[in-house]
Length: 145
Image (cartoon, rainbow, N blue to C red; front, side, top):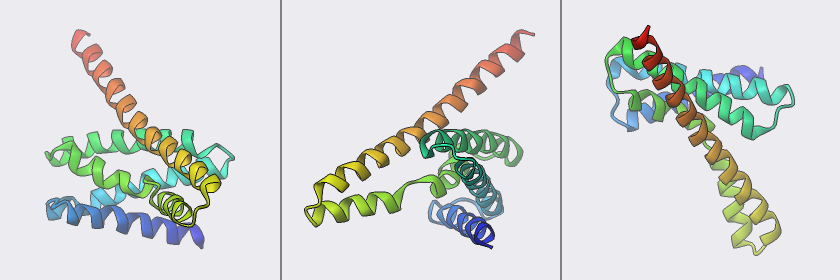
């Protein structure tokens, strides 16, 4: 039951950010599906005992690949899908906890949580960049053959 709630929540978060981002109405459902797909992969990998950082990298890569496919299909900029699709992976709750511990002068836990936020944010960036590099190499390879 928890997974269904997580899937619905991640869909709403991604589609809702698409609304905030002024995405066209016809791409809001694909934006939600991209975000939900990234969350499914992240959740499945963490359930299989993978650390959160590599799981975030793989989930961000999936979001980037699905965003590229949606951008081609709907003939919209890729950023519409990738920005709204990456929202469920953003470690906002952990960043909030880190700031709360800083305010409470609990620097030991605050620094640990801040480091975790930086690693997860770096994982998101790395997944998006790595997917783009693979896409560029595949496109260049297909032009040559």
